[in-house]
Image (cartoon, rainbow, N blue to C red):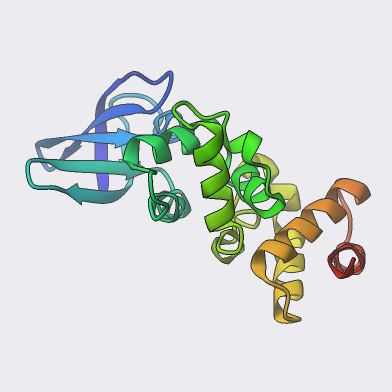
Amino acid sequence: MIAKLTGRLDSSGAGHAVIDVGGVGYLVEASARTLDALGAVGGDVTIHTEMLVGEDFLRLLGFARAEERDWFRLLTSVQGVGAKVALAILSALEIGDLQRALASGDSAMIARANGVGPKLAQRITHELKDKAGALGGIAGSSPARGTNAGPLGDAIAALTSLGFKPGEASAAVAAASEELGTGASLDALVRLALKKAAK
């Protein structure tokens, strides 16, 4: 929805923003990253929403980017991960870092989020390892990583088109990128990632 930001609460972690749409105020739950991305109070914002409906509640969640909403949906598909925990994970980790953690099985990184213990982090990692690559989190990660977004995403797509699972492709490309450093060409990334994936 396109709206005006009229207030915010608790921007230190997952919190709330008040969004004005045509004179009607909506209280929207959001991750800390979305709250930061919304900008100054009084400014126009575009926000992607998700409505949670229960027997005795209606909750509106807001996301600065559609891919963050997609990751929220994926995280909440895991048993034991509700909206609060998913928003805490999205507050603690960049989308690219989250995808790399899942692809490499790094449950300790996911456990950094508030309310995520080691057992839940392991369950999230186990259940989402092969699904994470399908969302293209590296290719669609934050603008700060934009210089690597194209080649990394293209390299993952190349490996998945060759039959590798998205999680395997993501892990191999992440390892190749770490070894080659920033500015590596697509050809070099794919060649090294193939070697790593084949081991």
